[in-house]
Every structure is written in C-alpha cells, then in structure tokens.
Image (spheres, rainbow, N blue to C red):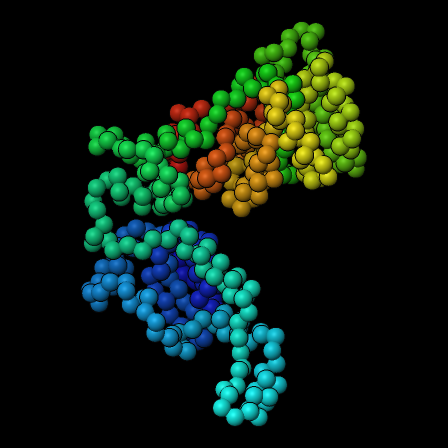
Length: 396
C-alpha cells in the first residue's frame, strides 16, 4: 500500500490514522472538506513526495518563510479540536461577560485555553512530526550517502540512530553506505553472551506476560545441560518459578520433567532471597520471574544489587514486534540491573527497524535469539553479521 484515504471529523484524527497506517514519514497529497468531514489522501511512496513538491513549486515559487509570519489564522482554517478545547474551559462565559460589561472601557473576557490542554495538544503535534521531512526535492543532493537518510527513514529507522551513524562513521566512496549502516547498528546492539550464560550462578529471566519467558528459561536450561553439566551433575542446575501461589506454572513443570530437572515454586521475595542464599554456592539457578512478582516491592532493588556481581545475569525477554513505547517502559524499569535482551518468538513474528532503532537509542544489548516451537537445541546467540544481514533483508 502506497496511498491511503481517511475520512474523519477533524484534521488531527485524520493525520493520526494516516501516520498509523502509512508510517511517520508519510506525506499528505490532498486535503478536502466535504459535508463537514475532513478527507485526507496520504502516501508513503517517495515518488508521490516528489510529485507533490513539484506541483507546489510550479504553483508558487517561494521558500518556507511565509509559514513563520505573525499573521493570525482565519477562523475557517482553525482546527475543530482547538474549538472544542476552547469551549471546555472552566470559566462560565455568561457570568464573566455580565460582570465585565458593567465596567466601562474593559473588553469582556469570554474564552481561554488552559495550559495543560495546550501542552497535550502540542505533544500530539510533535509526535505526528517526529519522523517527517520537509524537503525541496529539486535541491536534494544526488550523492548516494546523503539520499541514504531518506531510504533508511522510509524503512523505519529513527532520525536519531541515522544521525549518530552519520556523525560517527566516515563513509568512503567505494563502500556501500547502507550496508555500512546495518553493520554499525548491529555492532552497537549485539553483545557476546554464550560464556556469560555458562558462567553465571544466577540467571533472572524477566519480561512482560506472554513474552516467552518460561520457554526461554527451559531453552537456557537445556543449553547449560548440554554444554556445562553432564551425567550425574544435572542436580547442580535448578529452575525457580517466582510467581504468586495462584498462578499456573504447569508448563514450566512439564519442561522440568522433559529435561529431568527440579522446578521450585516460590511466591514471596523473602522466600526467594532465602532460597538463593542457601543454594547459590551449590547449584546454578535459572529464575522465571512472573509479571506480577516483577512489580513486587523491593524486587528491583534486590536484583540491582545482585547484578553488580558478574556471576549474576538479568535477561529481559522481548517478543518480536513489541512496540517502541512498551520497550522503553520495560527497559527503563530495569536500567540499573545491566539487562541483556533476548528477542523471543522470532519464528512467529519479525523484529522491525522501528524496534531495532529504539533498542539502539536506549543503548540496549541483544545477546539471545529464540523461537517458540522447539526447546532442545534451539537457543541461538546474537551475532553482528547475522543481524546486519537481517536488517538488509527487511522489506519496506
């Protein structure tokens, strides 16, 4: 899909829909008001962008300076949303008008916009414009490395990541700058993690519900058994289910039976601390942390303290296609516990350029890649070359 038409009550709602369907780099080809409704035709095709700009240039040869004059907008061009905001003020207009009309030489005050509402409105505008480009296509350089910005933005990579790449990397003329960008970003994202998993005494697996934490715990356990413990040493590895008593952890128990491992169920943070202190020197522990216990009082302070030791690892399971806002929220809650990202369910969905961009902006490290259809022998570790090739193959 390169073009999409939206019919809405107001311009902002229509713009929201255009941005959601076509992406933040979409352009507006046509805007009409028919029978009181706003009709907007948008496109994410670069050719439409060029055609649109060419028509504007033929119609009026001028720069953008007229957009920033001090002229007031006419009433007919103001947004309906602004009008609705004005009408929802907390001052009773009739009472205010009557009071002021009794005084000479004073103009009645009728309507105002409160600061908080205006702030929400401006934030919404900023989000709409976040990855949009205003550009004169006639003056755009044909040099490939500069046109790369438009190409990467169209693929969904953020302006911040692209800007960091252009600032840090000097591209030579005989090297493909797009491929260089993919290798640059993969180098920022990927961290070696195989030895860390084998050498950690404690491995916490955190993440939102449905992100594949339980399956990931079982895969890690299977990998550790294959590469560290053999024969009668299996008792040195245990899986801990850290979840409320009411939760169903039958899937984890089934995985434990498949791998011939003990699965310990613990519901309170105090009991978990006691269990870890009693077993840490004797057994390697893999701890599956439920969403509910993730928010338990004191849990984050405890894991922040534990991860200061290199023998303790914190893995965050992020399901492929998780949106950027959720990623930001999850990473922020664990930012002090040195988390390593495990991209999960990659056999069900793809990780996209937008998600990779926000992970890069947050300086995250990807260490594990995982699917969901197999347990034994299915854990993979992230490699720079593989991730770079994956980004190159992402379809627009």
